[in-house]
Image 1 (cartoon, rainbow, N blue to C red):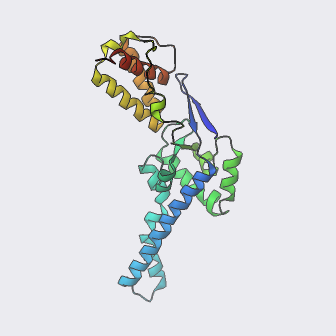
Image 2 (cartoon, rainbow, N blue to C red):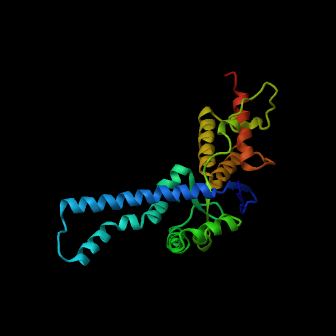
Length: 242
């Protein structure tokens, strides 16, 4: 699986798995199945109720188009209000992000949506698929124009395999300063780290690491996520018999 590598201004490197072409196609199919179901429901509901019985076909068409506007804006609205995800993307566990891994702006979601007319609909998806395959960050034309990419939110391994791995009897405490922490502190650290890990949000992880450096008064020679992992393991090992 291709990865999106990012170096933050603090020289911290993060890697995101790019969404596969197959998962993006399935997400697209799910979304437009939902749109088609909505359109059909609107058509039959309005027809059966006879709310717009008129001899003017242009008026009828105009009314239908007005009711169908939510479906027309569906991709843009969903990505804007649900952090880069539509229902299809939620099911496939992928989402749209800026090329630096942070949350995209409303303007960027809008650009992606407008460009879908060209790279998806006008050429039956051929241009979009070709662009995803050919570009380094698996970007369709809309992504290139908006400076975005689509990443996978699936974890490569269970979180407990890294952060909550079993601590052996031979474990050596790296930061004895964890004595300053309480059980509440340790649980809060664990929860915040888990949130940042699942969201793939390096800003959360970096902020937590900086706060721990301040609280423990240490200068760790390791990456922020490794530092947090070690602090939690140190704490649980230190108080394992309590």
